[in-house]
Image (cartoon, rainbow, N blue to C red):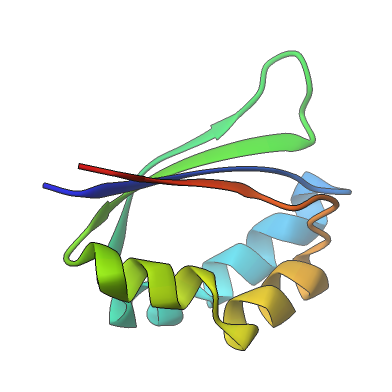
Length: 87
């Protein structure tokens, strides 16, 4: 099974999480299923997500989409995310 691992920093967990939750249908349409959502214990602004993916090409297109960039901006993502496509 392929996976996608994402690491990014957010300005505020309480502002990020509702936007992340409302973007769930777009992730599902891209074939991504959240497996784990972590907050760094030493830095609560750092979020790490692990998704299983139906198809890595579809997941890559989603990761590069304007829709995702817009959602990340609205959610207060502070940095360029690190995204790893894993098999």
